[in-house]
Image (cartoon, rainbow, N blue to C red; front, side):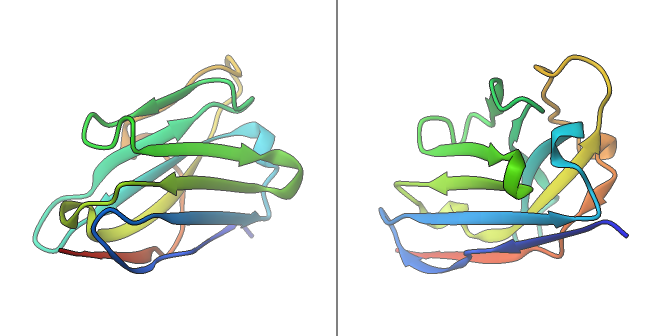
Length: 128
């Protein structure tokens, strides 16, 4: 059974940093494109960042570019997102997701509908 578990969320002041982790079980991470999405109250879920299977290719939403960094450790079945210079508008529940992909190991994915497995989410709250 596939399970993704996020951790690292919390309350932080604007300008601060958090590092989210997503640990997987029942999957071989190297076979999956990984992504992070977020959903703020009253808003639709939105793409944040994605990383290719080999970790060499990444893509970011414009709203987080230059502030967030995604990385992965396939040996540990874990993906991370380092979030710096946090803003109140970053407040949301953050979800990690996995998409099985047998194509190029450099491919990333920003469409939520392409992801098969999702974690339960972790709350990030940024105070002003």
